[in-house]
Length: 60
Image 1 (cartoon, rainbow, N blue to C red):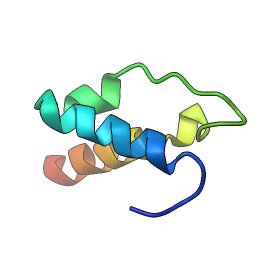
Image 2: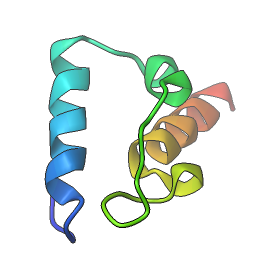
Image 3: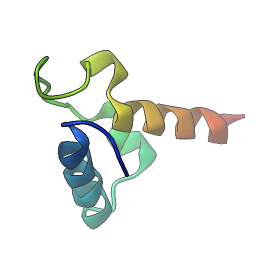
Image 4: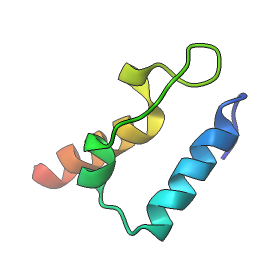
């Protein structure tokens, strides 16, 4: 994974999701705390978008 300042925060979130055996559905409905100067926009939060995309791909 590479990216800007929020990359470490995203890597931590992915690590916790793996350890907790969360599903794509769990990640898509999870509440995310964001801050405009530190993290991605809540409507385009990468982990939630990836989970939503996974759910949409499996629904087809």
